[in-house]
Length: 151
Image 1 (tube, rainbow, N blue to C red):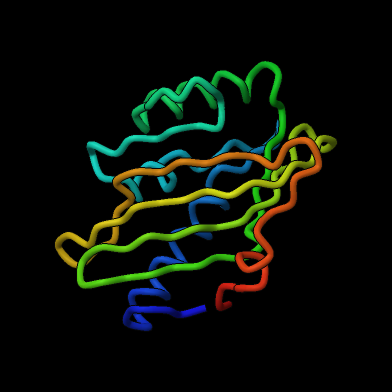
Image 2: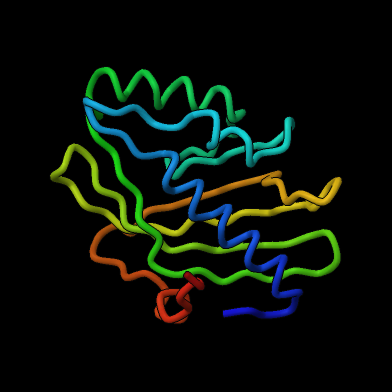
C-alpha cells in the first residue's frame, strides 16, 4: 500500500526490499549476491538480528557471519516477501516487510523486517534494520500481510 509518500519513492523502496531478499539467497551451487546486498546500506548502517540479547552488527559483520554459515550449517537460504508497508516523508522513510524464510530446503519460518531509510544524493539507503521471527505459533500481523507490494 502506498501511504504518505511519493509513488516513485515507494516504488524505489519496494524494489530495494525485493533486491535485499533476492540477493540474500543461496544454494550449494550458487552463492548469494553479497555486492547487491551491501549496496543498499549506508556505510554506517546497523543491523539487529532476531537473536537476544539484542546486539548491533555492521553490514560487513553480518555478511561475514552469513558467508560462514553458507559454507557450514546453512547450505541453502531463501527469503520471499509476503507483503510490505512503506511510509515516506521528504528524505526519510520506514518500511516493514513480512517474509517467509526457507533454510536448507526444509525449515520454513516467517518474520518481519523493519528498516529505516534515508534518501541521499537521490538514492535510498538503509541506515538501520531490525527483524524478528514468528515463534510459538505466533502469526504475522494481518494488516502487513494484506499490503502486497507492487510488481
